Image (cartoon, rainbow, N blue to C red):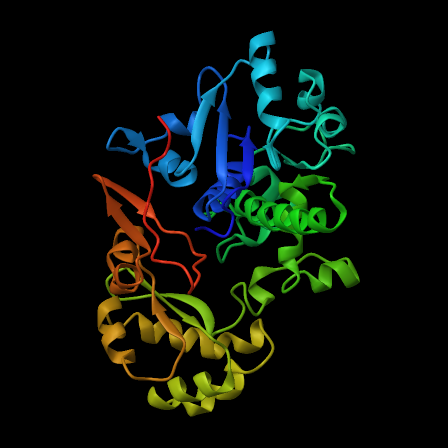
Length: 357
């Protein structure tokens, strides 16, 4: 028995945020009916493929059933009404206004099913000057300020490695849906969730955007304690062209490492405010890490109480014991599954289930 057994979810979303949200629900036992357009979710065509399916599609749509509907046809709309009239949750990711034009806006759906929790995911929200503006993840990251600090030492932003706005929307949406369901248990009525990728990501800046919010001045990564301006929260190249990170600025870590390297005189620099005052410590560490290979440093740090890690590529990351022993990557029926992060002590180990054809 999953925590969400008996919950019926109708999912009209495509690509990343909505499917991630509903995958988390399906992993916990919800019945998720994925309504796809005649051409299918575009993620089905995203390489690479394994056991006849896209790795991306499988890992965001496992455990769901799929129904292909043309919502521009009378038959398609009638079939969708049959689903939503008995659903607990509806998730959609169309541009604002599309669901209303199809006849399935929140007011119309709630009139037939007042208990439904309706989550509408968009880039910038259902209302306001940006409501109709097209954007995927990087657009939300750019307009929220996050892309400006996804930069190198020269300050040039680069394409981010994590679709943070997509993921923030999926996570926030999952929490919002569950909150609304708890509220419905008290009131008997569902609710409408206007969920934007932009609005979901923006609160993640609390640790870096203080000066911008308070003083109205831009954030420079090179002056920030967690964006590259601190010697002990930084990325360093090694002798073999690989990289390592120091990932903890606490005084004990600073002292342990600099004393072991014979430079306790640099402790004051490493504990100074981020930016120019930390340059002596940062430059010393940069020169020092360049003298050994990445794996030699891994061996050197073994047993030392310092927040340190090698930078692994995904092939290395997925092959390490941390992943294998934790059951975080599971192979079944000739396919690989990324296991859910949420686990309950009262339930048996997670076993993957197929994604819909």
